[in-house]
Image (cartoon, rainbow, N blue to C red; front, side):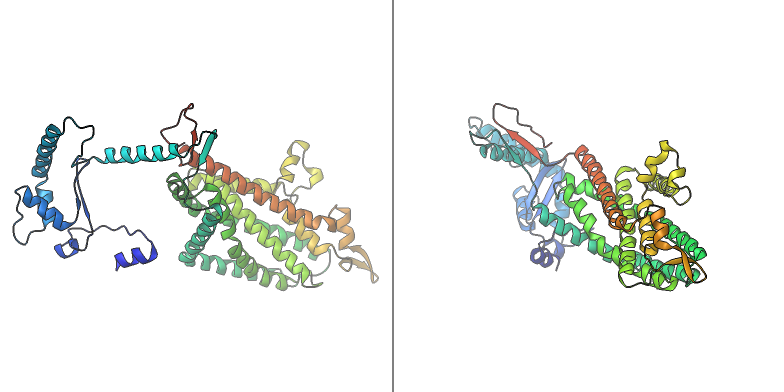
Length: 432
């Protein structure tokens, strides 16, 4: 069954069998018998039995030939040495010698020489150099395969995704019940601002739970890229694409009960879509930050501490605790690179930038409107999409930084890409 599955699906099956019986042995196509790095036999069980008999070693009845050969390794090695010496004496005048035994190191060097000769033969006289990439698939194909693998991994850990989904749904419902049907006055506006600040804190700080998963994936990435399975760029793109639909599902589960229970902007369905987009970008930004730091830090403890410190600093300079005008000039740069600032501004613009939003009325006349208040604070409606673009820029920046770090880490461990120059130049014997 395993053989059929490997042939039909094009898979490699690796398994360990302890003390296999003779019936299982008969199923093997070939057996490799090694001793001290030397190949003693590479062939079928019947060929091994015949070879033992030619050496004068006769396995007793009902005894496994392979087990008998393992017990008789010393005799086989001695017989091979005698045959090699005899053949060496007979063929001393020939240029090449056919050896009956070869070490694994010799086999490796032989294959290496053949590969280098074939690569050198591909160089033409009018070429200065040729760039050879040992990748089996194109970058697009690699990205598709890795994206599919990420989806399978998420599906295999469906308990984690299910728990995360339930957590987001319950959190949205609980927050909606706490801030249920806020009033459209100054007190209600203050409560809405507090709600937006808590949403940002909750969403941006709750994604560190994925840090151990990304750290494990980093180790797998370094092993697979060192063997030339795929490019680091393909992994980075696939990682960025794979989580988009799942984060959208989490955004829907969180925003649906929260938005309508609180009674946020009810002027149509478009404000809800803007709110959903902001939630989605917040989750994706947090995911990108965790991916970036998982590529940088050595372990989960340090990574968790660094991410918590960075998020805390960003929240402090977001403008919620200290306004932009109150931040010292030598710290103002933290306000502009804060991940909390732009979604927080987006929430305020989406909620209050509408003419009919009256925060305070006197004798039936509106004296403080949401739109006027937003313009006085510098939150015009034209900044709505600028905030979205800045959030997308942050996502791209953190993803790109993670790619650069992973590329550097993988290059330190070697790779399969090499440059082949003209014969006048030095051809490296090892891949760079």
